[in-house]
Structure formats: C-alpha cells, structure tokens
Image 1: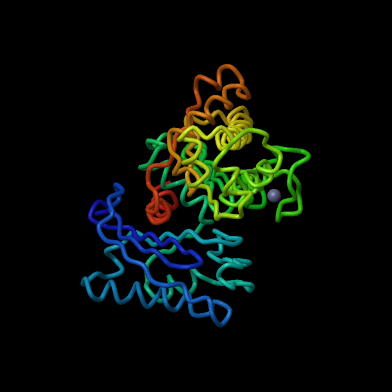
Image 2 (image 1 turned 60 degrees about the vertical axis):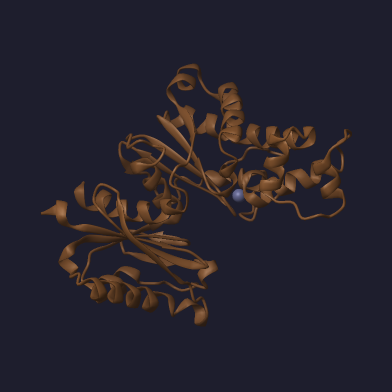
Length: 324
Ligand SMILES: [Zn+2]
C-alpha cells in the first residue's frame, strides 16, 4: 500500500514557500510555490500553507489517505518532537508556532518538521550527491553557512538540537566577528557575503594587477559569482581569494571528516555554483588537514539537487520519521 502513497515536501523560506508532491522513491510529481507573507508577525503564513495544500488536494481529487505524510524544512529553532518553530526572524516568527498541531489538524495528514539545513542534507543524502549512503555531511554556503550530519542513516541532532552548526566552526581564531557573537566562524568567510568580505579586504593590500581588484576599489558591484568567474578566467587576485576561502573550507571539511568519517561531504548553496573549480580547490586543502585513512575514504562533492533539495529533503523527512 505504501508504494501507492505519496509524500508532500514543503520548503519554508523568507520569500516563498515551495511545495512538492514526491513519490516514495524521490520523483517529483508536482511542484508549486506561494509567496511568504511575513506581515502581521508572520501570522498569515501557516493559514496560507494550509489553504494551498487543501486547494491542491481538492483540485487533484486527493484525500489525506493518499499521503504518507507532510515534511517541512523551516528556518528558526525547530522542536521536531513537538512540531513547533520559534525564533525564525526572517519569517517574523518571534513566538512559538505550533505547526504540527495546525497543519496536521487541518489536513489530517501526519506532519514532520526539521530545520531547513538538516532537511536539505537529507535530500542530498537520499537522491543527490550522497548516493543514498548512510554517512553523509552536508554544508550549504548561502546567505549564511548551514549544515546537516547524517550518520547511520539518521540525522544527528545532539543534546540541544544544534548539531551540524558547521557555519559556526572556528576556522580563524583571529578572524571576523560573527553574528553569533564568536569570532572567525566559517560563515564569516564562506557565506555569499563572507566571500565578498574577504575579497574586499584583500583588494586593498593586493600588490599585483587585477581587474577584480580594480572593480572593488572603484566600488563596482561585486558578488560571489563575479569573484568565482574572475578566478576561473585566471585573475590572480581572484584566484588568491578563492584559494583562501578553499583553505577555510578544506580545514572545516578536514576536521568534520576526522571526527565523523562520512563517505561524502556534500557542498551546496549559492557559493557552490562555482562547481568543480571550487570543489577541486577545497579537496586540495582538505587533503592537507585530513587524517590519512580519512583522506581516502571521505569524498567531497558539489550538491546535485539545486533548488529542489529543500522540497525533496522535506519529503524524505517523512520516510526517515515513519519507516524507522
Ligand atoms: Zn558564528
């Protein structure tokens, strides 16, 4: 019976809520999205999700029994046992949001939730670059740096639910101040804004000729893609910036792998769009920091699911929570 049933994955973000109906082997049958209305302290978000689900089900003649469950990835602090979220500031959710109670109550479909980075990690582990192997670590380099750890096929949550906060691993003891209150976190140098910050700071002291350096000094808009593209085209200053970022990432990956020995560390998020060019540089530095056996066993790969990682991972949360 389970084979016929479907999964619903929901990727809740600050600008849109993405939905997908997914088969139990990971094929997307349908996907759609709605705008995230964060006005009125985010109180319209949950009703709009429920409304969208009910409309979809009615339009397609689905009943609650047609689905194994609904999985959701959410920003903020998620309590997966209670199905609640608090402190999701990009959604204006300052108070406790009883998502399971609301969504399960309205749809009659079992509801599961985890934080967005953990959910994306599950997606990549399941049908992305993790090849469904049981020991996979995911690092996402986006606006911030997040991560998820899957060991023996299970997401690792830790004592307080904060396991996998890879973005706040210290990679430079004398580094930049981080929004978390620490110093030199991976996020300060390897997020989309972090990469630009490193480039801007180094531009003032770089001695050689460089088009990228000139762009920065002339206050032209520079983002991660501009920096990565310049490095790919051979701009020596851009290469030095990417080498520095890759060293921080190689150090973080080396330490993660020495501790956990995953088969794969998957690198995703906007910065990872630089692809194999970046992966090769990270691997070179990873080899410097990884313990000899780890160096052979742990592979570093670029994420494969792109924007679908969130909805696919959210749907796989249903399987992770119901099958085991
Ligand atoms: Zn931090």
